Length: 418
Ligand SMILES: [Zn+2]
Ligand SMILES: [Zn+2]
Ligand SMILES: [Zn+2]
Image 1 (tube, helix red, strand yellow):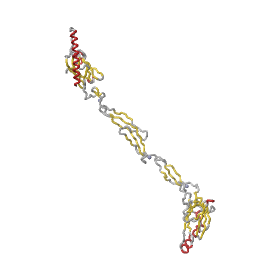
Image 2 (image 1 turned 135 degrees about the vertical axis):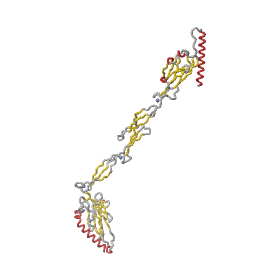
Image 3 (image 1 turned 30 degrees about the vertical axis):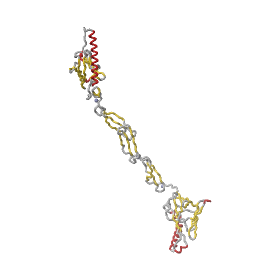
Image 4 (image 1 turned 135 degrees about the horizontal axis):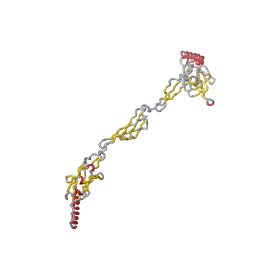
């Protein structure tokens, strides 16, 4: 009988609560939060006298909002299962402040009508799902949940916003969002958080090995995949000219389109030019060519004709000419002329000076500041003059020609042997 007493107590309580019903709900100060119930259906059974109920079923009844959120968590029973009743559109649903009743559902099914009858002291709950010809009847089991769905009423109060919460973090390039909630209702409002912009680290600059390009780059401290780079060709300015022996300098300047990058300069060595020798001297700095050995040539294969100007050419510069010697004796400057042709020195020994030389072999030495050049030459026979017979003249000329030929042959042999 212990169980029977419990059931009786429960039924008494249900009846009491049902009578308090709507008033209690309406007086509930916690306006938005009301109803929902877990209704325990317990029926008397034949075994009840043995103190052991045969079945004990539970049906969950809740008041929820449109989102399925429970708006009533107070234990309350407004569906009096102890009595036979019909819950249809005429049935007064519990009032919940700020909410309006919409419909009844079991699971996903919308209920048109709910009927409570009693059989053998047990509540039998039958629902009609669907309308018209589609309508189906179904008897609920205790494991199901009966939902009374409410929608929230529009309110006209002054919202009182909280300090807000960042609901989307802004990034370097994308806006974020902050959401404010009203403490008096479920209203929210959002506010844009501007994109942060990149947080660039100081730029770095890299010159290519051959200095043909300079690359600037910078990386975002927040995300290393955010990167800016720019490669440019530098301009060049010779800031110190190189000489034959000393290095010069040029200044390279790299200027960037991106204003975040500062112009870069780099001083680069220019190698010394090295001397450019010609005629025994550097064309640029006039330095003596240490390896220069001047030569002395003539156009007559080493032959000077008696009484005739004898012309010699040296590859040394006339600017370096110092003196001329024949057979070791310095020749008076009035006995020869020095001139220049294509940078070479042309020395013309006057015929009057040749006249003073003995017929035969001689050596001419040209002394230059850049070196000394020598050449062997011979002076041909002095021609006969005045009363000599034509025959002798002719003979002499012939002899002279032969002699010249011989000399040429001799010289050729000599040169080819060298
Ligand atoms: Zn509000
Ligand atoms: Zn960034
Ligand atoms: Zn030089």
